Length: 353
Image (cartoon, rainbow, N blue to C red; front, side, top):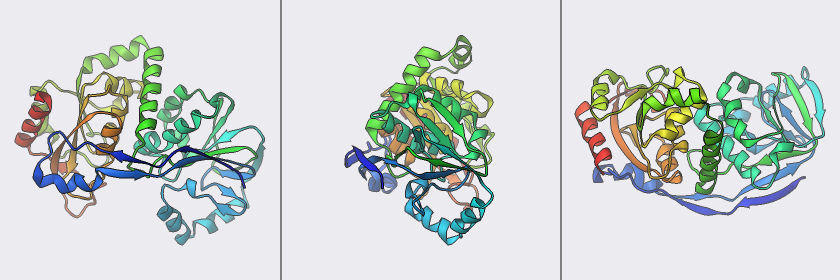
C-alpha cells in the first residue's frame, strides 16, 4: 500500500453556453453544461513495475490510472491484454530505480489533445506539492516519436525524462502517481488556468526571435487547417477559404511548423477557428476573453471537449455545424462539408459581438 494525498476536492465545472447558441441546437450543449469533477489525488507507491508498453503493475494487479477510463481497463482484460503482458514479462529486461519517479500517462495519452489535456494536467497537479526538479518522468516506448512531448515538458522543469525501451521493465521504489484530474473530455478550471500561466511564462521567457518571426504574420485571426490530417477534414475547404480571407483570417497548418511556433501562433490569436480536432487544443495558450469557433459535426455524439476547454480557459465559444460527408463513418473519423453562406454569417457574428 502507498500514501494518498487528496489534492483537488470535488467540484462542479460550469460551462458557458456558446455565444451564438440557437434554440434548435440546445440539446447539443445543455446536457453538458454542468459536470461534476471528482476529487483528484496523488498516491506514493513502492514496488511498482513500469513497462515500455502496457499498464503499471503493483502487488500483482494492474493499476486503473494506467487506463483512460475503467471501461478501457475492462476491454483490455477482455481482449486478453493481461495474458500478453504476462508473456512479455518473460523476455523483458529489468532494472530498478530508487530515486523518485512519476507516471502521468494512460492508454490514450499519445494523442495531442489527450497529452495536453489529460496527461499534463496530472503533472501540473503534482507540481503543486512536489519539486519536479528532483523527479524522473517515465514515459512509454511509443512516446519517443512525438517531438512535441519533450518540448511541452520543458516548462515543468523535470529532473529527467526517460523513455522506456519497448520491452523494458522498471521496478520503481518511489513512484508518484497522480490520478486523472477529470474524466477525459472534461477539465478542471484551476488546473487549466495554472497550465495557461505556466506556458505563458515559458513563451515570454524562451521564445526566440525566429519563433516570433514565423508566428507573427499569422496575426490575431487564425484558421487552423486540417488539410494534412488523415481524418475529420473539411471536405470542401477550398469553398470556405475565400470566406475566411474576407474576414481577415490567415490559414495555419500545424503540421508544417515546430510545436513552439504552433503554441506561439495560438498565444497571439484573439480569434481561433478550426474543425473538431487536435489543433483546437492550443486554445490553452490564448489570453482570456479570446474567441474560439469550432466547426463540428451536426450530431449529438460529437464530443464536447472543446466546448468544455473553452470555458475552463475563460474563452468565448462559438460553433458552426457541418454535415458528415459519409454518414456511415463515425464522428471521430468522418470528413465534413461546411455551408459557406452559413459559415460566413457565423464568422461575422463572432467578430461583431
